[in-house]
Length: 589
Ligand code: F6R
Image (cartoon, rainbow, N blue to C red; front, side, top):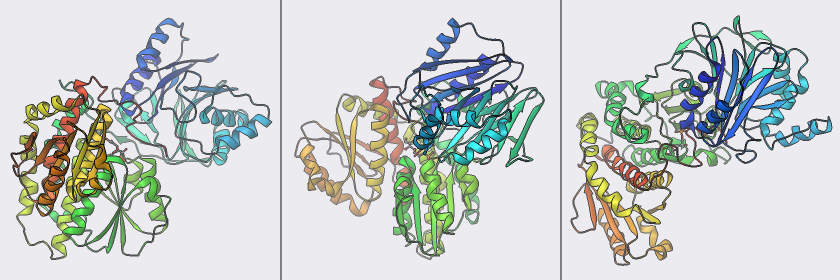
């Protein structure tokens, strides 16, 4: 979702900015643009669609000689995806790019119009640009500070102004880093944009303003200079390369056994290292999308095995609901990126109430990682495909291990051998992934269908939710996940001849019940595809995954659904790594 790159230095500005934008493509975007600046002028070039369109445009233009520039990929919020709305925006002397949303844009715009400002685009970004320009009186830091006081919302800005030789950056609720090269400096919303040039970076904190000039950089907050630590990124180039795979999604699925081992091993060696959640009387698990579905699996295990009351909610609802907290409540935030706006807001809501917060997170320097009280990191490494796969699996594995530890602590789990199941899980997962031919066969049976259902009960229903989401987001086939027993209360009317219905059958307590529901749809003509840990041998298609303890079973089932979704999307010719309308890191509400 939107990306920023800025550069000041002696290398070819155009190439660095373009390469940076390409590295950010995975975040999702619908237009892009660049601004170059020298002593005399600022040149802005924008384009709709792929970055290759911008590249073509740049080829045709006579570009100014310069040593600095800013660039942006836009994922439309205020105003459609067209060239006028694309960033950079210019107002008076100021040109800027922006990630985030200005919530009071309408009100600020009216005020600026009254002052005689004219607007060209429908964007909130142009409003911010005009606001900063209205405060600019040869002191950009002062103007930015004033504007930040007026703006309500989230932002990361990279700003250039006629008449000085600097790039400025500031952020609130949207990430921005300063890249520190040997002889040059960068601004970026994501380290991926600049990692080819430097792995040294500084994380800008809220409302810190960075000034990048030929002499170096200066960071201030409220007019006072701030000393910041230079960090080193551990983003290998291999992680950003498809390594021979056709798509990042496939590469990332195939990486699951390795990253699973890396994530679990330290806790298998010493379970005491894992945070103990057994002392809490109630746990709220809050997340979005797939991370929320991982949370649903955590809820089942924490309740059923460890006897802890758990509320699992999507962050966009939780943040606005009346929540009744108890002192003994723990809020668990699950997030791959650690930058999801709604999950951040949910975390802050709990913190305001002085409730303990625990983050299960992948990106170490992210807002959620930094602001939560406790952290458990998953070791997924960078996830480039927009649809999460390996990070989801690690989220499930970690919360399941937490449930196991809590169950032991509470004396409700006597089976010490379960840790061995976690230990062999990566190897078993590898065996499941190696059976790709079987999943391709299923994909070939369903790729041309319009509607697909996933049904299951309890944990199997949570698995259905993720299987259904994965399929619809990458293949654009409409699909729905249903609690198997609920279908007959209305939705069963949609079942038609040959409509694929996935039945997930891993929970032995409800297996027979789900089989009865599968029979109900089968008798109405559905094509039944069963994913189970115990063969049924009576349905159209069947995948039997190895049986393992309840704590680990989902980790052997969801990857099958991920691979089926991948194969279906590939057969349908979809843009698998960057599905339409989606963004990797959802930094707006
Ligand atoms: C789906 C997907 C999203 C994310 C969700 C939360 O494949 O990737 O549903 O899971 O946007 O993102 P994070 O985990 O970064 O908070």
